[in-house]
Length: 181
Image (cartoon, rainbow, N blue to C red; front, side):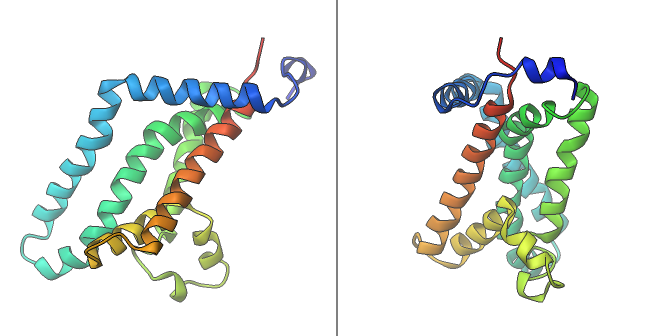
């Protein structure tokens, strides 16, 4: 980062950061296309998954709920966190293309260690600790809770709060890295 980039930034201000985060969330909530994608794509992907496992109902029932937990997170990461992560990454990327290249680096490791392929307690060494720091892990766990319990459990609520906290954290970090003029 050059000296001119450093001088473009104002000192961190919680008020300005919060206002920027609220503005981003309001823009997303007004965008009907994004809302349709956030709701429609996971449903379409679940239908595709069901068709893939049409001969193996047992496999679908085992993996389906966890995958259902992953789809919204991936879409959300692509939309909301993608926007927020894009804002955050833009502080470090030299151009838009570099910023877009960072997004798979945030999503794919989460997909691999979220507990869908291998339970976290069976993961090698530090991978379980890494998985505990990733939002997708909690989405998979919450989906599993929803699939196996008829009511809302404390674990489901905790996981939902953790996911929401991650979204807010990334939005705040993104807003804090924006250049202000």
